[in-house]
Image 1 (tube, rainbow, N blue to C red):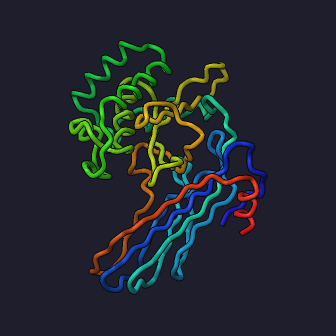
Image 2: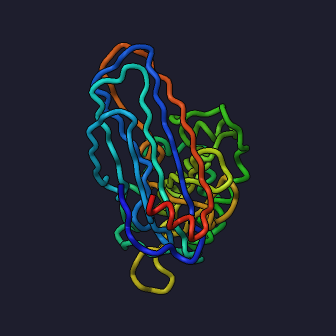
Length: 291
């Protein structure tokens, strides 16, 4: 459990509640399950007020911070007879600041944000699109906006036609996909046109599952020498708003998958997950922090 013991910001405050249930046809042993569901303490105008994650069975818990600053939690459960549940409850607030937020200048030249990743490897068709977009918009921000808008129009949102291992090229060939696919196509194009960009996993108010979008890193227009992070949601064709809550960032989905794990045994497993994101008023936020 983490409680930062600070007053909520004047902007919206959200409760994010998630539950993951794994069921097995026979007992399994030495289950090691990693969750990446806890937001950073701060990310732009977003801050975490309270975060708790728990297992329904006795388990050893370990936490660490990965190379992108994401918080990973691993539970090791000695024996699972038939089912185990993991639950996370997070309260976050946003102060409603508009525009980009500042990051370390090193992100501007970080090869992880500039070079292709497993799910964003470019194809000839993506390279052709990138050349047109580069010629059309010379300025960094204008180019990022052009890439986001092109991606939004290129795909049609449809569930069930892609999976977690679908590449940007595969999604573009289908011309269909979900938010993860929109993000991968935009990332592939950003990196082809020379824009450092990262995948963002999080939540969007009003949607039933997790959401994905893209942050583009550009030199701070004010000349501070820092990197300015501009967040785009290509699924919806615009900038990220106050209803977005960031959980983790990386090169692509594989860096930020919410759940992953291993176990010893021959049993088959089945995952079910639920998620709820609610807007809280200040009194509700205080009650959640003291619960």
